[in-house]
Image (tube, rainbow, N blue to C red; front, top):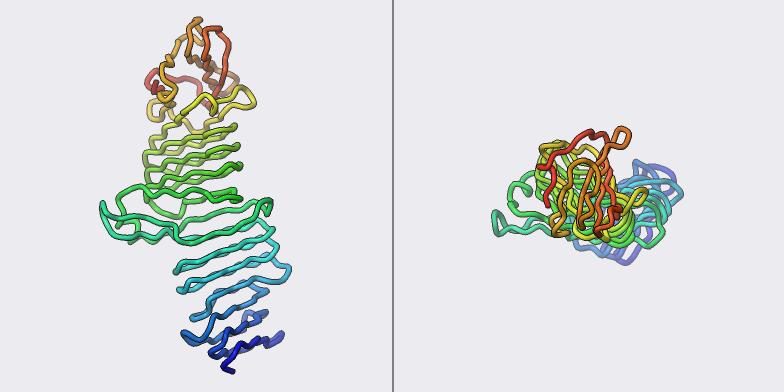
Amino acid sequence: NAVANILDGGEGADRLVGGKGNDTYIVDNLGDVVVEEANEGLDTVKSSIDYSLTANVENLTLTGSGAINGTGNALNNLITGNGLANVLEGGAGVDTLIGGAGNDTYVVDLIVKGSGTKASVALEDTVVEKAGQGDDTLVLRMGTDAINAFTGKAAVTLGANLENLDASDTGNLNLSLTGNAGNNLIIGNLGDNTLNGGAGDDQLQAGAGGLNTLIGGLGADTMFGNSGKDTFKFNTLKELGLNDKQDVIHNFTSGIDQLDFSALKGYKLVQGGAFSGGAKELVYQVVGNDLVVYGTHNADKVADFSIKLVGIAELSVEDFSL
């Protein structure tokens, strides 16, 4: 009727038609159909199966004991997961996605406003995740037309209590992606990316192509280059560790990629694999199948930090930015 109703068809394939009130629909069958007219209350579907909101329904709450997925519509949706691993996708609109105890994936839209040099990109959806509730991933999406309208670099910072940031489905949009204080996985795209892990033991993966800058930040970080020109940048001594605390770099291509120590100011490369006794020196040595760069800050010939380059046998002076 015209007030707030709870409509539950039971186990069969049901047709549930609401009215003007704030209605709640119980969905438990793939054949269930929810019918709601525009501007007829603030309505909610509670679903124990994978479900995509039909038109004119605002909210979706996942129920039951299954790892199920929920998708919004063109409205501003509130989508809430259950206690298992859910994929929550708001779709169009400014959506709020709330996870639970499982390893949840949040699919959110990057919105372009304007075009050309005056364009800006915003992440308008809100993700709510509490501490200790699984290994959760933020997945960025954007349409091709929107990407072509933007010529700058969009910045996204991973919110609190989220572990992973995946931008691989955003084409060649130029991105600046930053992690949080946790141990993050950050995946770039085909554009020019700046990937910054922040604190924690992070894994950074550059996308194919593009001019990429990878900054591990604090912690023992693992960084993966790709087919583009990748720069691995070290900004402070606090970011650098020794041996089991060292940063590790995969897919480094000598003659194309660079190790950038310029922010440390005054370091120099010493050939021959041994420190000469001066302050702020860098050397490199082959260790097994890998190459390790060692650095000393003091004039004591003792390494203060190291960086492992996996599967590399040789470097040149041109591989260093000092």
